[in-house]
Image (cartoon, rainbow, N blue to C red):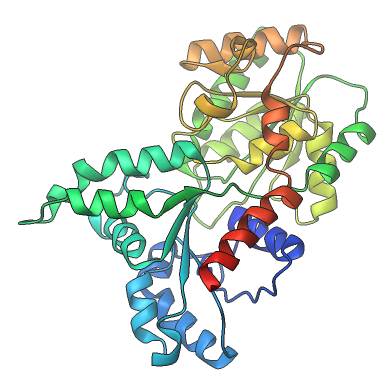
Length: 357
């Protein structure tokens, strides 16, 4: 069940469906109006599932209000065991400038975790972050003693990473390197929480210094998008290559393989599939020193990959673009290869089988 069937959520389910030994049916809604998907998606999905027949296990994303979904199912389906999968964390999701915090969405995560037979997070960082924030969030509920909630969710939680087609990504890396200036890639959603203004400020500062580079900007954009995208496209001019969403998966893999450096400037990241795919395609990652990157992108060479602030981002990019690093003692690709879809599907299959029995 996925009420927001787009981008990484869609790629996750389709990859799992291809590699699982189980039969997986997808019940989905289009990726728009995410708050209404959380609030009302169960109305649509419960009717779809009821018409689809019997199932052994439900895999529900964190955009599903699980108590509502189960209540709307026919009685015979309400006891089907549920694996609730956490892509994001609404206890920590950053607010846009025109938003105020609405505890409803975090509370939906909480009661859905409690309603599920099993809860899976896409990274260990995400699991720690969510469970660590619960004691501070739950006192918003008057007259509640929160300890049992934390203990209950902790007892049923585990980590099941996002599956990736490592072989296809690495095959592209061997085929697509070309001549020309170093290529910088930014391949994230065109939204405020990905901090595009930080990325473009760094590139414009380097362009003003005369640093040679080309830039590709991919990722999904929406009707309302930060103005910085159009402004920076004009200012960067001839340095711009790809600009906008890449519809074809093959074309996107080619774009990843052509990148020399891939950059994240986000305020929140719990797995980071766009970065991980680019790294496995051969790009050198540059990311904030924190979030999931503190787990996956550290090691003896982390000074070549992680930055603390805007000044460090500019300095690191300047260094990498002037003198691209050759092979070095980097543990990052090996860590990411552990998320190969054939291996990860076995973990999901084992969990499905255990729940079904």
